[in-house]
Length: 289
Image 1: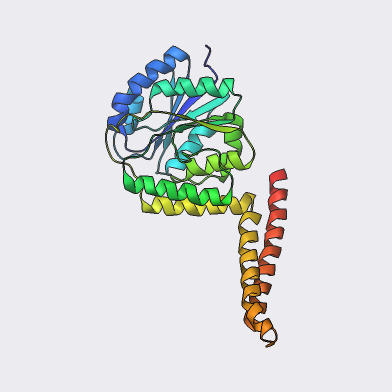
Image 2: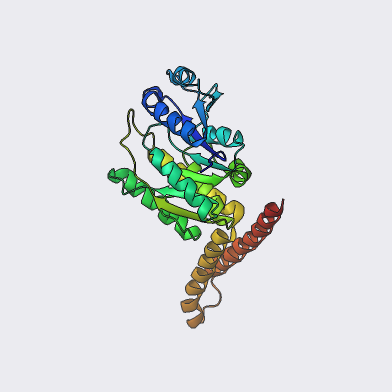
């Protein structure tokens, strides 16, 4: 099978130890399958760059160097924009993603004519992280229909043309993985997921924390406001209108006239819906640009 239309993109920040072991295996598979490989050194302050240069002898690896750390999403953006093949697959530099799954996901995106395939990980044994992921997924599902479970999986394969179209809307932080998946889904592209297995992390620790979860929720809210604002404005407006009506019912039955509080609540609801319709019109114009 000719895989010359596939590029692997890896963001790397202080991953010298993991890459020292992971890169040789990955480069071997790239040569075997005619894949391209881009590693973005995201302002590492260890010897990540030296390790990359040490292995850059086979004509397969391209290195993108950030002078300062831009974040996980920022590194992926640089890598994606440098791709010139039909498909991109993103994997992490810590050695957790198996090379065998690259071939599996590549074959599937071709056979299913999909636009994105997400590598679905098994249950996270870390209760804290697993709970955070579930809460983010629950929040996202309240705002839009989501056909996949593992939104923030770092292993995804995309059509390059679409990925380049949407990266400008994605954040530079860890929320990148969630947001780019939501953008594909919201814009009615075919997104599916398949199960993958993970190796144990070779070295270091995950940088995902509570702040990451909070930022992700904020970014999800921001994307929904940008592309489908009525999903937020309409429920909020109806809440105030219904609250105002419920407030007014006992007052009206008691023949005490119209409550100022009820009138204010209903008015606020109508104003929110009005602004929601206005935001929806702006969103539709943006989609046409």
